[in-house]
Length: 387
Ligand SMILES: Cc1ncc(COP(=O)(O)O)c(CNNC(=O)CNC(=O)c2ccccc2[N+](=O)[O-])c1O
Image 1 (cartoon, rainbow, N blue to C red):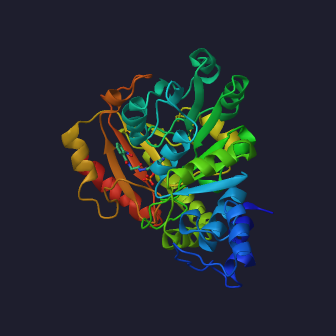
Image 2 (tube, rainbow, N blue to C red):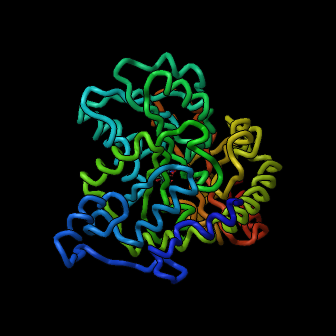
Image 3 (cartoon, helix red, strand yellow):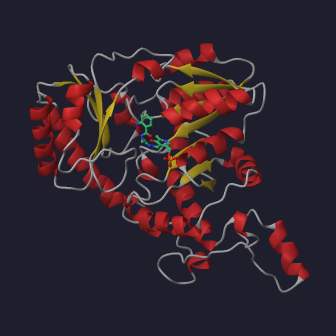
């Protein structure tokens, strides 16, 4: 079955949908039983899709969990109130005091803060590594290293990592491999075929696709599924069936939306490549993006999120560029139908394992579903203000 067909059919088992097309919204804390035997059965099977208690979820959740697990190729999917909660929930399900974590230097900034503040306070030490390190990762592995965390591409600087090589080396040392797979979404990469153990999605982005829900998922292979599921439950991680319903609904148009985002973004990126102000594009489909060769090997498509670096500029000129756009809005997110623009400063001050030339400003774009010609006209007017 092709991925476009799969995203239409997954997570619609009649035992969850009761025969309607979209899994209904079941709002519940309490679920009642007629007999003690029914209660015993539900308790015994509470982790396997039996109605038990609100915190374990209901049919709305079970349908979406089945959909994501099948799309990503995992054994089971845990749900969280945000992508960041999925990251912290996955890490805290496998790390304890005295453990060591390897974290990619291009990680989403709040992920870095989680490591430096909360995990450090729990006695978990983090070493950051160059996203392009490849086989050199072996030298950073210690006897107490438990998790290798990847984010590919990095959500601001867009480096694509050699996930199969890094996963193979990590497994030679008994590590668990976690991948923040949000950019690929569940349809543009096969994380478990690359050796990943736990694939994390900020469903907030393309899965929901309408900038109106916060939601996260962590999908595990068979080996680690029970520990992820039970530790996330012990942390009380649960989600609103209304939000999960909207994520299920978003899933059905993920294929066509991603194609349009990709098509629009490539048109805009190719135009940017002709601009004299642009130093280079950091779009995975372009050779100028670090790890482009891994994108061609490991991904089956791109989307609307990419960055570009200007040859020069300062706060004043970048502000003139990004403000007063007709269609690009400034906002902290991506993956919805709208176009967004961010001038990102201070990358050199955040990173600890790699250097960054801060003399050249970075602009991150999310290309939405508007007409690409209108978006190009918007950027053209922006460069007039910039110059
Ligand atoms: C790859 C990846 N993984 C996890 C999350 C968190 O998801 P959540 O927002 O649902 O918690 C995200 C959230 N993404 N949000 C953004 O990219 C918005 N930008 C920022 O938040 C941000 C924050 C500080 C500095 C720079 C940025 N930035 O992206 O430019 C993500 O991109």
